[in-house]
Image (cartoon, rainbow, N blue to C red; front, side):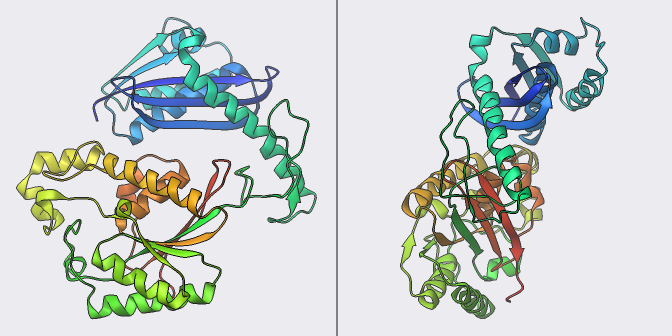
Length: 382
């Protein structure tokens, strides 16, 4: 990915007061949204929040592998200071500007442009959502400090101006501020195949489970049966995943649903090759593919395309199984993508996270849009 556009904003209700930032990364067509970031940062000034938004947007661009970044903000101060035309006098701005400049140094080119507030509406909306979330987070923190445990009912303001409370909302784990009962996805990777033994790209090919793979599926099924309270099992249509899912569904005595969106990445001409063989076959393309999720394998698909269909599956599962536990049997890339969506991070996670065969991860998605990751790469039952 070469060029992106970053729009960032920050705000404070009181200056200083409860503050938050928002940042959005667009493709160079200024239409396709590649990433969004927002965060409540506590009590701070508008300028601090604006710098934090800039930093978040630059960091997200780096995660996406961008080399050229066009920053657009309605903060005259940040734009002029980052362009070097205005001096930075306030002590609180200096470390933030240094952090932003360190990120800028990692790109080939970064430009800064002031835009009217009306043209920065996407980032402004995210910043206001972050400040709204801050009031919810503060209430949750007070509830926990007062002795409430996760699962207890608490009254939470629905917005910065609302006075009514929301009952029967559960406190989420940690300090996410998410409320409601989540749809919990138990993400199970399929068992061993001959291609996985040899470390070969295994996408749309359909190798069966090995004897060890069938044993791994049986052990995983037994573990899930012991957990209980699972509404359904959903699976990729590929045989290695489907066989693993069938074992789980039988042990749980629940329906099995096949979802095409859970299929592994189409590695195209690299199917069946090892990492080294693919790199030797197409050295430049393979290198570019590793650093840019928008680039497809030759004759295959990109990780951006995988993310799009997995995001559709996530939305469907939340709608089909609200507040329920669902086993999702799939492959490395779709599972990592669901974890990426839950964590709200960039595609670097795809390359840095290891998932063993027949391993279990758990991600929760809340009805208000919050998310939480509870478990990654558990193989204790094998």
